Image (cartoon, rainbow, N blue to C red; front, side):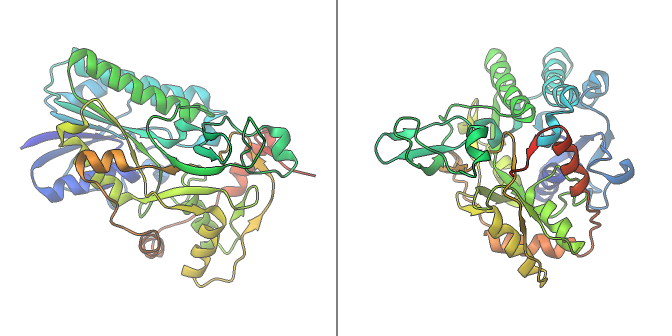
Amino acid sequence: MKKILVTGGAGFIGSFIVDKLIEDGESEVYIFDNLDPQVHPNGEKPDYLNKDAVFIEGDVRDKDALAKAVEGIEQVYHMAAAVGVGQSMYQITKYVQVNTTGTANLLDVIINGNNKVEKLLVAASMSSYGEGRYNCPEHGIVNPPLRPESQMAAGDWELHCPHCDEIMEPLPTDENKPQICNSIYALTKKDQEEMALMWGQAYRIPAVALRFFNVYGPRQSLSNPYTGVCAIFMSRIKNDKPPVIYEDGQQTRDFIAVEDIARASIMAMNDPRTDYGVFNVGGGNPTTIENIALTLAQIYSKEITPQITRAFRKGDVRHCIASISKIRNAVGFQPRISFSEGMKALAAWTETASAEDKFDTAANELENRGLIVKRS
């Protein structure tokens, strides 16, 4: 049986990859995870952790522990990361140490240690694109920078063409779009993919980077205010509080169910056509932030109206939609779980999941640091 290591394997995405690998029955699976209390309350192993996997408690910042975990491993799914755009802007050292240095440690111990690693898959992020790709009716395709703060302070939310100032239409973003990072988190995720691919090419060890879009599903921490927007909104609604929405609520995101992410990851790992490549993994169907909040309130049968603040967060993008034609053409991947189906599954899981609402604490932290701007 193939020996596989999943870093961050006790976490949201990693645990689903672990389950799918064990379900397929052809692997001996090892989990390397530090059980970060922000994700795992009290630093305890989650109940969902697969009992057929070998659990190793350790931190990617601990090079010696990581070296031991990699011994004899043939495939590595590198999911371990500090996650959170806003938090990364004031916990800079932590994010760089976990994401950038942690990945450097992994590459170092693989190439310098006693192991048999045949392929590495790294979880990259759509956040490294910054804004998505747009079309101007007059000037064609544009890859814009962030909106100026002066524009957002005036309540002008959409992207304007830099040549004629007309409002542009968002397009699917493909892997060739320039990466314009707008947060420490995004920059460290870009570091992860570039280091892995550069290292892989140099040593002829196949590596692949998957740029995950907005992942949602069961096991996403409902008490972590820096996790995905679906989980944050659910935590608010479960505690009978309105979801808080910045700007006008019409900004869009591209959501994909975690089960589809796990399936895409395993397909990419096991197909040589992905070697040394970068691939988007998203749903390809944009959804407004306001619609997410309204959908969740309806699923929970609660008459809660989202609070649209018209404030804005520095560094937020307006629209980013995945083009998934590259991974579809390479390995035949296509999402199977619709947004409505996936949201119902997530809501069902949250019925028994604890949800401590920490949104206000996180929002106050960001506002006090000048990262949320209220409009007068």
